[in-house]
Image (cartoon, rainbow, N blue to C red):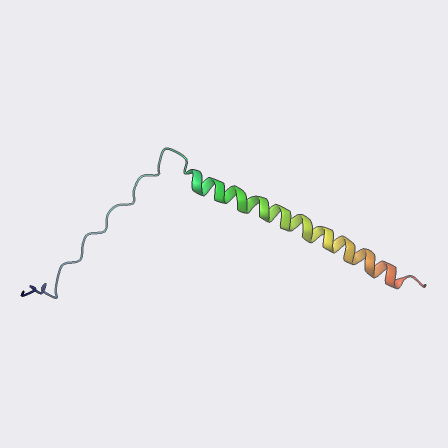
Length: 65
């Protein structure tokens, strides 16, 4: 069976205009975003806790025993 080859100089397809933003919220992205936001908040909280503990530890080491 002979396969017809396409001419190499095909005109490029015209790029489609950007689709309109969807009117309905996209639950998957919203959930993912909220999840990441919670994780980020948790991370920031732990980071500040670690910083506090580190400073307390440094203070404890500076005090004469």
